[in-house]
Length: 115
Image (spheres, helix red, strand yellow):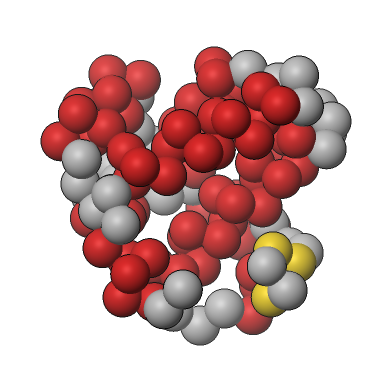
């Protein structure tokens, strides 16, 4: 999928896929929400508002109240690409979240996921 499509895709469309991935492995929607809040600084209410607005991925990350500085500690491979080597800022934010949800689905504890 090209970068433009990923940036303009509604975060509300991606969100249920993240939740489904976690739930398939016995994790919960509340854990997914906690990860998103940790990464972006959104409150639960603000996250729900963003989902209702159906903003695109780019807007979701650009409007994030406080991107967590500890996200720079997220390393590893997602979709065959090392997240720490991604140069496009929005793409890196998208892949950070992908990586954290992967870790959740693989059974990592929340304290390790949230670094």
